[in-house]
Image 1 (tube, rainbow, N blue to C red):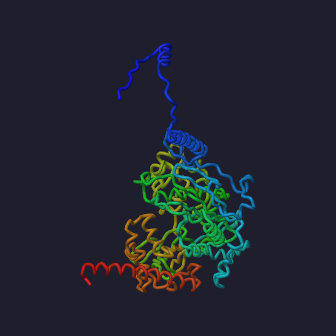
Image 2: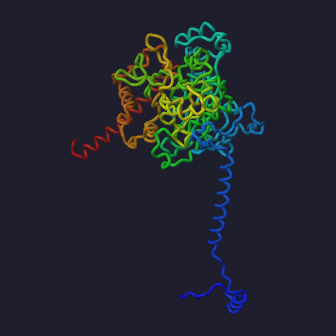
Image 3: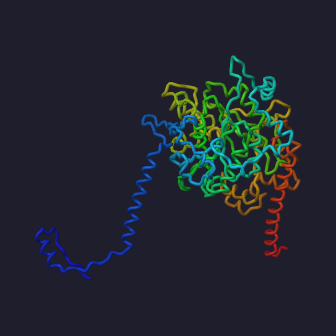
Length: 563
């Protein structure tokens, strides 16, 4: 149909005459879809402005770049208050404490340039229902009870002197350090780790830590989505209540939550552990909330790692050179010399004397790690320890090369300290630095004939083969084919553990728990029943996996006419 031509512009009189000549048209009803579109557009606009308002009303972690020297201040965390200074309105009411927490929007939250942290209650702020209360001591053996009953406020000086000397540490005197136990603050991520491994590490730490900060995410290292374990349901609430009790009544235990805002495209090209490092930043907030001071100790690990109980007690009271006040914070770490178990307490690597790492004779792990509070980001003094540059948005992730990564400070010295007329100082440490900067501290073992270990790593202590495969397929250093491989072919660590389950011990492995040449053994597995139960479960997992893949191989050979 030809369109009527109208010439513009029209005068007012021309327009009026034309309108009079135009026949009236019947009013038509506009389609409902138009109204729906208008309503949707209005709703989207409202939501957009609401999100922007909420986003910009938060103080974020985004660092501000200095125009002159491009130095990033990584200490731009939102201000937080210690527990004792919080307003009463922020405390949960007594009635609230019996209800499972199912609305994350009720938590205090802090947004960053890579995601958001949500902070729930700690174990001292909740009232655990009687039905969820557990008596941990009921299963303790007399030996375990004796080892765990060491939290007296009275310090046995002679006993502590011997303990300190066994690690090569001095003992505090009035002229050096006050005689008191340091407060220990712990941080680890938590996810699908088995109850078995959490019980093993928490028993070693029972009633020692001031704070245990655990952080859960709803995605894996490579951003594969996963369900919350400790949030959102009655079962999650029960498991959280169980977790609260494992570390002892003297310890504040919290599980906080991290939701990333990043996509796989945004992390592409960065190192594999970036998302883990970003998630670990949440420990700083929790430690700050709980009143961490410069003379406290921060310990960072994975939930399946722990210092030995005896060494934790040594860190609390001994004259540890790296814990003396006035640190430069360049190499302040104390690192464990760690015995590695694979899937079972009966399967461990040989503990190589005078060695950290992996060699032809065996293997020693080198986590967890400890550091003095005055060197921790958000706790220490930024004027004494100017911020460094980091690989993600300048202030997140690991340190840039020559800006303090792997003990190399060339650019940090020339581009940052020199302009401030400073020398010899190091930057404050993020939790990922505490764990990953491996050559910037001192590994410690006992001064005995075996160089006995100071820590334990319960590696691959999962409850079934599905959990093991999911870990190797989606977490750090993922293997996309892990879901379809026999356990023994996924990784050399699993190969050793599978051999052990069959009673075939590798050259680099111990033959049993009792054969370990060390005066240090994990307290949880001093219970023979616990050792036997775990080893039997691991053998069952291996038998089922062998049967599944042996049958698959047989079927394949049969189809190919080889049987």
